[in-house]
Length: 203
Image (tube, rainbow, N blue to C red; front, side, top):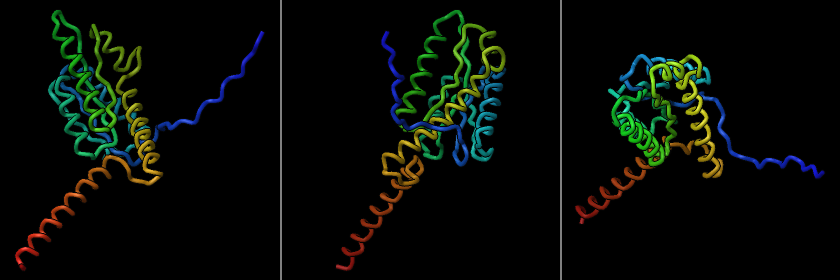
C-alpha cells in the first residue's frame, strides 16, 4: 500500500477579520422589515465585534430588494467604503415575480461589485416560506446578516492586501487613493489649461 504525504500548501493572500480603520455601508430593504431588521442588527454587531467603529458604518434604507443594487452602486462609486453589505428578504409567492426579482437583484449586486472593485457581501434571503426566513434571521440556521458582515470584513482586508501586493507594498492603494489620483489628474489638467490661456493673453 502506497502512502502519500499531504502536499504542502502554496502561500496565499488571505483576508483577516479585522475591521479596524475600515469603512462600511449597509444597504437594507424595508420590505419584509420583520426579517431585514434582524439581519441589519446582526450585521452591525458583526462589524463592531471585528473592530469597526460605529462612526465608520453607514446604513442606507431602500424600499425593496429590487432597489438594493442601484443604491449599492451609488455608494460604491463614492470610493468612501472598503466594503458594502446588501440586506434584503424575498419570499416566494404564487407568481413568477419572485424569480424575476431574485435574478435581477443577484445580477445587479454582482455587477456592481465587479465594475466598481468594491466588495459587496450578499445578505439577501431568498426563501420559499416565512419560516425559512425566520430560521436564517437568528434561529436554527444562524443569522445571515452576521455572516454577510464577516464576509465583508474579510473581503475588504483581502482586497486591500491584493492592491498592496500589486503596487509593490505601497500603502494606500485602495478605492480612496484611486479617487484622490483622479482628482489630482483633473487638477493638473485644469492648471495646465489655465497656464496656456495666460500665455496666450500675454502674447
